[in-house]
Length: 424
Image (cartoon, rainbow, N blue to C red; front, side):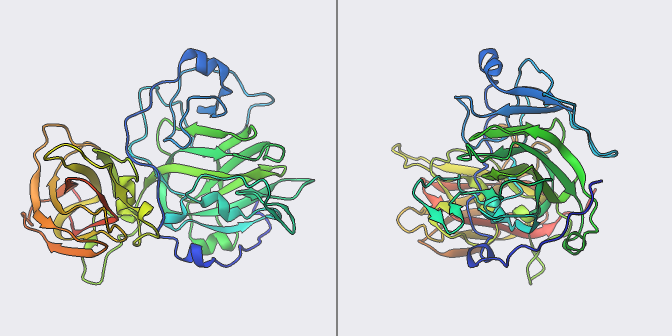
């Protein structure tokens, strides 16, 4: 267990962060990426650290912000002494190359309500930047009264110990892996990083009572790179992370790929529960197309800030076309009432939509799954919340819902309001 750091509260939430349950989450369900070739792996800074794969994305050919990437490569020890793991902490193992995390969510996204609890220092750039959904940018001519403006978390120089920040995840969850991103930090990046996790209340964290255990041992960072770390199996459930920066420097973003594990059910005043809401464990697991925006946005909190916060497909040019997205319900249950929100989709909303549902033990239902219509075709209009009662059976429990729009377009949110099925 790490000693509790001297507490320094974060600044009050800005107006932007106060409206945090609104922005794009970029982690859509997609096919597993192709394994990295032997030649690519040999050129990469790839090593095994207590069962964690480390791959520096300074190499070419990797997407800028993918799901965690399983890789095959010749593993070699990290330089220096092997890192230590706190007794009792989970020791992750290597993920096989033919396995990918199922539809990961960025648990540290500001869209989910993630926030900074405290920090040791943020002299040059705020720790809250770690949680932004947007990719980090570099503005060569932008300066502040403290020096160069940087889009990330950057501390002052000459620290005799190390810097740290404590982050509260938007929702508790298990972790599949990390992306520690040092984009644009080239002469000022954090040279070494470790991460600790805790499952505690915000009150206990602020009071210094939370028990943090190391879940990512100290690892070397490269300048201007994405660094991916992948677990073979999900970790325990965590609510807070402490990011340690040795001895000082900058980190652009922290992506925490995982899956929400609801601790309490989020319902509405009518007693119904949004079975597909990300806070209840819901997630998008498949879609026909995500050319402009990800279907993962469909289950986020709030109504979003821009049109880019929803799901939008490319324009179709073939007759009788339709696009679809499959949502895995966080809480299997009985569907009673639906909300289809086309907020800010004015010239590109779908004119017609349907909902179907099925029960499946798989993340993505098989091709021969039986889908039951739960909402007959309905007309949609521009930038409006549409409410519909179920036209299907209300005594059948479902695990997945398929939204189909005709022929294409964009939609902001989908709410599947119903009653959770009794636990088996």
